[in-house]
Length: 100
Image (cartoon, rainbow, N blue to C red; front, side, top):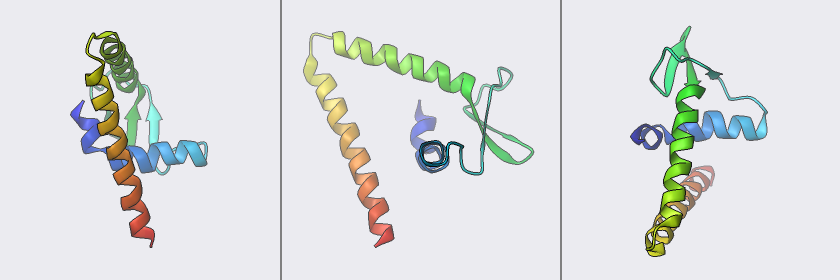
């Protein structure tokens, strides 16, 4: 979903880096909220990741990846992987440039 692209920096810095390096997200929360349909919502002003929505989105992404792998045209999957790796590579270099 588009929200992941729009909120890439928040997801990367607050959740991925926090969970990978500190065992907890940085200055944000993670909760189950079947009542909220949004990926993110606020609890007492704190940005909170809705794991119910995240779970559904990850399962849908796995299904899509499985469909892409099973396609006759493997070039499509290779192109998507290549584009994603280029995007991640650019983001890494942009972050390094800020540190220099």
